[in-house]
Image 1: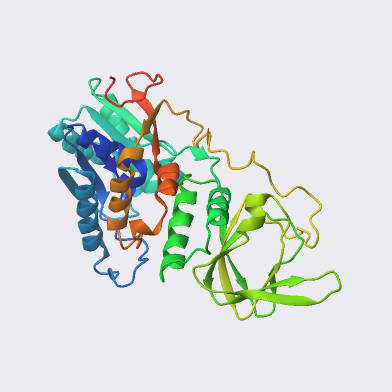
Image 2: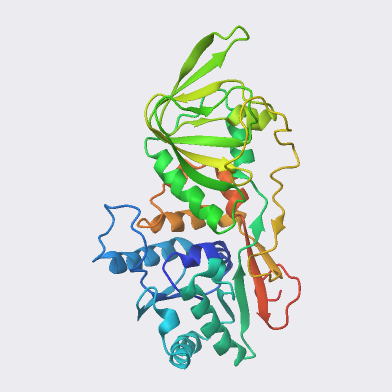
Length: 369
């Protein structure tokens, strides 16, 4: 049983684990305390503010269908208000739902609420309080371990190995930007990701400088040009929305081999190893531009300081996890086949938990086997 705050929490907290358990014969239930009506609308064709709660509940049910979950329930609380509720009353309400299903295992948020969301923290505390009074229940907190995996490194290596330049689907830039920003926020990748705007005529990349960023063009057009030692410049080509640039220098750990200049107003999704500083120098690279030690995907300590006790390998069901994520179209208007399968498995192929009850110990199953 997973008890969360909003539709889509189930995917990031335990989507693969739930899918794998159902595939192995478990009966599962997912509960959302709200319908997520205060969330963003990232696909304007999918809902309006007036319909968002109803639509997100339907998305939750469709997502759970992909995961194989047999029982789904949304409670009637308002998104964003859980911390204001009477705590004993909320504990009793969630406890009654838990007891009626009588699960062997309960999964909810830990004390950090994944990234500090008050609704997440409140639900986690209420579920934990109830379950600790039921010693027979196995209780787990979802754990968002900060990974050291860098999309910057993985994508650059993949793009550099392609025989032809990556030909993205028409909506790839918008969709991938949402996917990348969200997955970095929950710790699936350790890149610093932001959106940059460049007016016409500006150097986005300067030949000879360090290769420490990867760019995805969201809008506008750029010119790729190379300077000769005598100061003359030759144009190598143009690029537009949905195309990456900067991958060769990152993959080969070399300085930039060409300039990239904005021909019109350009916006880019930017992947970096670390946050950019206002005083970073340009021009010829004077420092190493990265090495093979960068991008190791060893999990790091989570934001709450808790140490995970349990890791579940969900690579075999990542396709179902991503299909469930795509069912939440108001939040993630993605098409699963837009992304390389190896990238999805690497980013989303493990799920981490802290065992709260019984006493924690290292394990690889939620059922104690």
